[in-house]
Image 1 (cartoon, rainbow, N blue to C red):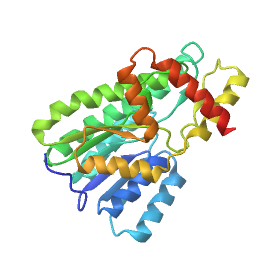
Image 2 (image 1 turned 180 degrees about the vertical axis):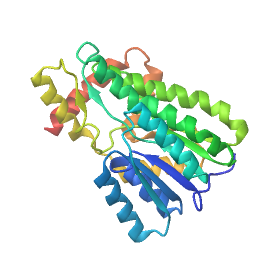
Image 3 (image 1 turned 90 degrees about the horizontal axis):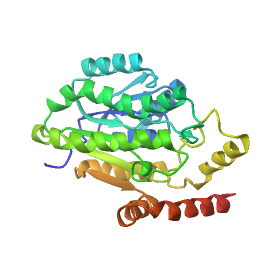
Image 4 (image 1 turned 45 degrees about the horizontal axis):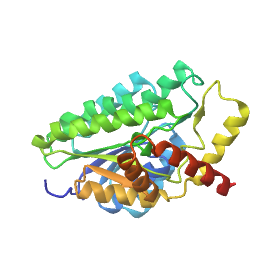
Length: 278
């Protein structure tokens, strides 16, 4: 499959108001892609669009949508397919986090994570796939996580969603290859975004533990622009998978070499990093 061409294409990016999504939008615009940006944060989305519009002569459309609501996601998917038939790239970036063991999070909280991290990915992909397949050379991206490679305790809901995204994209890759559509699954490590800071906490998580969870944000150090650059390089080269950050590379290696015992090593490293960040 030939390299992906950014210039002149239209890219749909979810979760575009901040973090990796905003950095992806900026990087795409610099490469000449027209933009369709989604987020539930109306102010942040408008700010990103305005900043990009000042420096890049590309078309920018924005849609405020809560992808945690199934009906909203279905409607926005149909709208995007009808309004942007020139779409050649879909990046399913939006995500939410939830801290707490399986018995500490409510069924509603668990389902809320799946709604955004998994069901919205599937729904938007289903809506835009007919558009993508009309453009041989199109591309699809979904963000999993390092927690789609390993599954630490206290992240059951998040890991469930991210392992599912990994499986979804890996299977879809083979299905879409004959149509000339590439698929990339992204596994970011500790990128400096607001996902940890804005993470939900399980209803049954003790207050002291919730306070420690909040400190996890301090160990996320990779700039979003660096993560976006790695992702866009992978898209251009049609890489099936990209590990973002040195920590992702280490975690992937440990998961493959020590499929059972890696958890003890990673737990110790996480505790050490949290202490150093205080």
